[in-house]
Image (tube, rainbow over all chains, first blue to last red; front, top):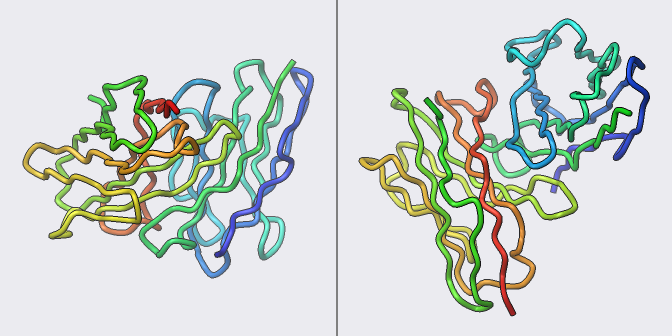
Amino acid sequence: EPEVTQTPSHQVTQMGQEVILRCVPISNHLYFYWYRQILGQKVEFLVSFYNNEISEKSEIFDDQFSVERPDGSNFTLKIRSTKLEDSAMYFCASPGGHGANVLTFGAGSRLTVL
Amino acid sequence: AQKITQTQPGMFVQEKEAVTLDCTYDTSDPSYGLFWYKQPSSGEMIFLIYQGSYDQQNATEGRYSLNFQKARKSANLVISASQLGDSAMYFCAMREGRETGANNLFFGTGTRLTVIP
């Protein structure tokens, strides 16, 4: 079964530091998503990426966030200057794995900002 | 207005019994998809079941079935023969539009299910 792979699984950082979260989505799909889940809350959409460009972003995805595709298979979510409220689980997701109609999520990267 | 509403913050079920987790949705788009994901304490999001708005029959996946009531805009998850490993957070989600690839998911607030031995 195809998987979405995320690294690191857990990162602890100091407020104001830059963080890069990485993801390898299921191959052969042009769409790619980042979601965020603050502890104890629901999963929230951050940004979608299509064919090397951002196709949609939420209000949460402000100027401190950026998403890139540094090579053919990897995607990154960068948080430029972390704040305490950025502490959350960050999920990447892509179609595939359970059919084209279903988003398959990675295991998540837990970010803790101190 | 919330696109996905899960009114049960927590549910308890006896092992081997069936349980229904409620989900209602709100959309004016005639094409949409409904999903259930399971989130165990380890944190990952595990896909359980999908129902398309045009699907005539309720979706089933093993012990999971989706009770799709289109007129009521409800998409309840039924878990039969509960197991201790079913204890987790369960999220209902919706995609508006025909293609999953092109449209993001809206999630509910989740229901925490606890299976009692």
